[in-house]
Image (cartoon, rainbow, N blue to C red; front, side, top):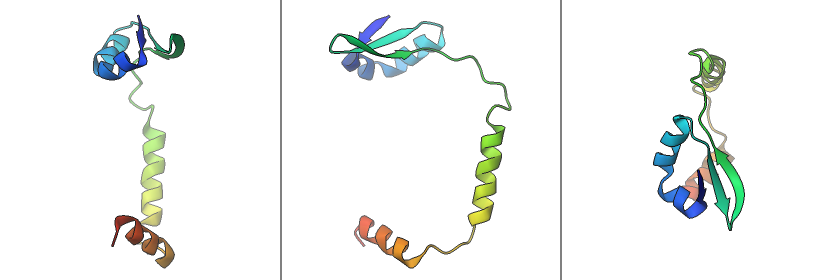
Length: 81
């Protein structure tokens, strides 16, 4: 299937389901193919385990550490406090 970007934005959920079902969707911008949406095989249960372990390790390493004052001041300023 070929669709333009505007249509793809409006129907993204539907297009993702079609791609998951095996259909290949080409997205065009101003008449030129720019991207391809296709399904993936089901990942094995352990495919993301290394990422999860790494994230947990990082969280443990930084748990309870104070945020430097300069950083905290920046966040307060960004939030408008």
